[in-house]
Image (cartoon, rainbow, N blue to C red):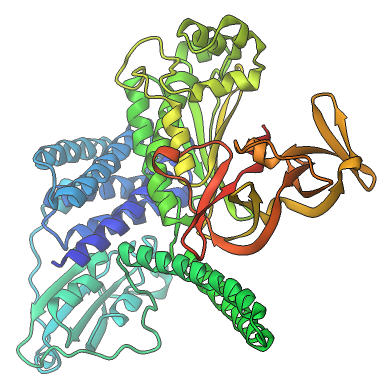
Length: 638
């Protein structure tokens, strides 16, 4: 099989595993949920069928036994805790094996042993209610000879004996065969005689489909991979494989290497920078004798190019969007493993998996989210005895959710545990020499909780397999900053904690105002700018340690932007150029030396030694190659 086929199997397999885990989590709470049971059965059934394309016998055997148990639960009884524990174990093993296949190309060395143990465990559960899964797995191999008239109609014959519960599995046998590549002959017949109409069951599939195809065997196996356990193939003597033209009904999708998309995004950013240079050319042409006509033509072309480049940049950003569901699905197994290691019972609830964000965000979120989940289970969730004493449910709930807000995505990890005690945080900071007692006493509760982001800070009393090694939430904050966002924590004692990531959805262009402070240029996001004004020195009043001026009916505090960014104290001028911006819901004035220009910018987060620098949203390149820092006015003020 080709590497492309294996890559597709791994991609689809992870989605199916995530779906099965989600359904099993629902069944663990509501064992009689028929919709979740059918959905889980379809996921396991599809996974089992896909393994038939590869040499993955241990996985196929284990999934076949899981499918038998699920069939029993659908037909004969409501699942019990032992059933779902065994099915969770199977799905967890499949998840780990998919990771191993991705890394090494083959299953782990102990896969056969694990598969046998899990199969025996599942068969014991099936046998406990009088069903025998052994008969199904040890059935004699079927033999089939294609009809004689198929010999001249293709290269491969197919016999599809559909399962009686195909419809409940989400399979449409006729549609599946109709989609067979190179289909050249077809016969449909009943598996068993139809009998009288009185005994007809419209929900049971009683079909056998025989077909001939001019396509190659690998194409046919790929098309029928989801029902491979119900398929028999036979080679025919006549016909040659042909390449059939794709009609309008062909899938309009294209699998592209991620590096090519990244390169396309980089080129789109460079095109934005080059486009911005036209404004300087137009201004230069306007200063030349008789250059007004040339300048006007350049500005017209720039306006047209602006629109096209912005559309291109937005389209490339959408190409890079991927759903959060597969990422979120990876945490079900990890949550159970962490909880088991700590002897706690924790249920992970996930929502917002359909939210799409930039691929770079998804790639960079796994480690910080895993760290937050680990902390929630270890430090937040109480032991079973403590939860019983506090009157809490024995099963703790950790919720992982995602919602979009304008051009940002908000991802929350919320637990119902003990919460964070600000007094304990302050005491630990003093004990570890991070703060003096006086400085700790001056902190309010929110600032105290924020201390958990201090490098090396940990609330763990001892080192365990899960935490306590001094690699703390500072890593989480650093990861969020590198992704162009931020992370904040909110907590209430006895009720739990919320860790909230606020991140950009995609690579969008930011409209930027360029200002100068001394010899340096800085960018301000126009989304925060309310207006620009000229304020006379006589209108500026001193209020306590600061300054303010009156703008219409409002009194606006005035700050020198140069002082905030570490430039020299500006000289007092008769007229101040002021940018009025909205900061934390309030209007604040920032005095600058000059307002130079406005432009569209592809803002990228700071990296390297400057990653996480306070007051800087990111950087972009100017047309002359200079780096322009985009300031975060809210952080500069606070």
